[in-house]
Image (cartoon, rainbow, N blue to C red; front, side, top):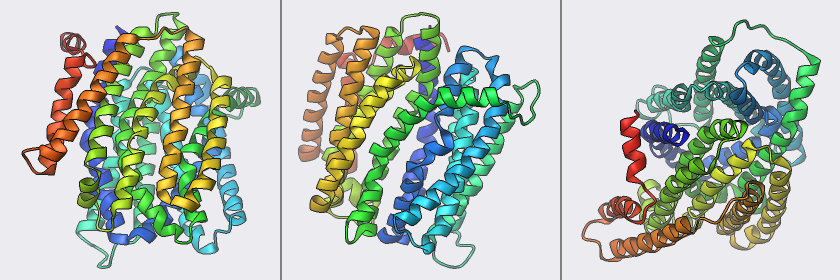
Length: 481
């Protein structure tokens, strides 16, 4: 059954990513910020997110469109791949020119251009990897795609570990080294991804078929708008903090230190989304019910997001003190607000992916346009008054509007009924996890790390107790492995 296949692959994905990506985020990325300082890292974070804002020009929704179509008809791989390859080269050049023009208009000086150039190269390589992976997963090679999610990070960890802890250049770590290391690791991962897809092709030669390219651009445009609008309301806060505040670089660094943990846990939601899109697409094409897959993914994802958000919020000060040299109560409170967006973003990964698979793009774009306007408007008001904490509150409000909107659209499009059992389970789970976190934080028998782990382990027991975790699903996995 499709939900058993989903469970098996999502557990495999989570396992391999929990081995690699948290070590990169907290072992490498965090260490780099501690070594270069808040201001230098703040510049990097602002420039990275600035290039990320316009990365849709480089992608143009092609990955999502390609993944959906090839998943429904594998024969389209031969037709699309060569033409998309040529198209992405042209889009990469256009993307580079656009970012430099906008950077100049926004007042970025020439001293930033060197970093911008390599960050742009990295975005282009990352987009290429996502394109190759969209074909791999669409062909049903889920395990291979799962392994591809960690290849670039493994290589980057090796390079940065050498630079950080052996100091071969006999000087302090520079933020430029981090960017160069990303370039090397992304290039190698892109080459591996290309070789995997190349083996599935009958022939490969660069083609420039105008009719196919026009078809791709026309059909990808709605996907591109979806991704662009989502990128704006999730990443523009970094740029606005750096541009609007007197000490914008340092403030962006503080915000990045809290946002890093949100990025870390959001890995799980992204993995769900990447696996769900081709599965939902197949079910919808076969006119098969999506309810079983929707239910099992919702139970698993909400279990993880709720447990993480509540427990991290309680222990936010201790977590920030453990991770960073330069931190304060304000940074911890920023984390306390941001971490609750994990629940909302996680829900969006399920319902938004379902709507993408169904081509309900007009409704999504209308919703995300409202979210963009709300986010920018609130940021202009909140950032000058409350700094990064105001940006965190804006993010929480915006993600809440986007999540509720996606549920409303999905209910209307698929005639979904209210699952009162699931709602009751979620309410009970929230209350139990909150109570457990409160008791462990204020009256726990161990140090704060022991008490934090106690909450997480207790949360698993509570997940089974309220029914969010289902023993039947896991037994089915073992029987069908």
